[in-house]
Image 1 (cartoon, helix red, strand yellow):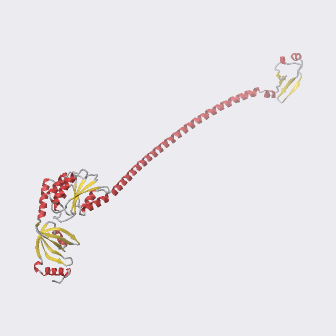
Image 2 (tube, rainbow, N blue to C red; image 1 turned 60 degrees about the vertical axis):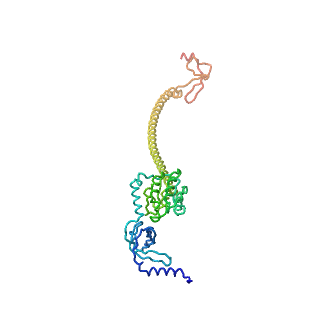
Length: 397
C-alpha cells in the first residue's frame, strides 16, 4: 500500500504536472462566453462548447470590453491549478472574437421575430394601477428574490399583500412553468399587478425568460406585468414584452409600493399647505374687515361731526331765539315795572299824597265818610289818627 499523503502534496503534484506540460502553455481555446463578473479589476467567466465548460480568469481589466456574454471567442492563455483551493482555471491574456454564440443568435432571432409582430410596441403596454393592494410574484420560493421583494415591499408599506406562485427559474421545463404561472395569475381578479423575477446569471441561466412561450404569455396577460429578471445589465425577451422593466427584483418592489412614511409626510405637507391657505384667506378677510371698519369709522366720524355741527347750529339758533325771547320779556317786564312804579301807592305818597282809611276801608269820597269814627291817615313813612270835621261844613267849605 501507498503511504497516505496530504491534500497539499496532492494539489502541489497536480500543479507541477500542469506547469511541466509545454503543450498547455499559451494555447488558444475556442468557445462561448457566459457567466461574466468583475471583482477588483479581475474578470471571472466561463467558456463552453456543446459538451463541457471551463472556468476562466483574466487579470487584464482592459479586456473587459472584449469579454461579452454570449460571444463566441478564441481565448489565448494557460491552465493554472490553484493549489490552496484545488481548483483549475484557464488564465486568459488575449481575446479574439469569432462570432456570436448559438444562444445569443437564437436570442436575436426571436427578438427580431417578436418585434416584427408588434409585441414590443408601446401602445400595447398596460399602465400600472394607481392603487396597488396585492402583488403577484412568479419566482422560486427557494431563492433570495422573493425575500428581497417582501422585505422591500413590507418595509415601505406593511399593508401590501404578496402572493407567490412558485416556479423553476432555470433548467428543464422552466419556461413552461413560468408561462403557466402567468396565465393563472392573469385570471386572478384580486391580483393588481404581477412581477416575474429571478436573480442574475449567464445567458444560459436566464434562457427560460428568452423563450417564445413566456413572451406570448406575457403579451396576452390581462394584468400588468413587471419584468425583474437578472441584474441591471441583463436583458431578456420578457423585458421587451412586459409592461414595465425593473433593473432588479428589489427595484420592482420599490416601483410598485409607496412608502407609508413618505405618504404621511406628503399628507402632512398637504395639510400644512391648506392650513396656510386658510390662514392667508382669514388674514385677507380680516384685512378687508379692517379696511371696511376704517372706512365705516371714518364715515361715522364724518357723520357724527356733521351731526354735531348741525346740532351746534340748532343750539345756537335756539339760544339766539331764547335770548331774543328773554330780551323781549325783560323789555315787557320793564314796561310793567315802570307802570307799576307809576301806580305804586308808596311812590305816590312820597310825592305828598296820603291814604285815608276808616275801619280798614279806603275813604275815596265824603259819602263814605262816617263822621263819628276816627280816620287813619297813611303817609309813606307812617300814619296818624284824626277825627273828621262836620261833613256839611267840609262840603260848604
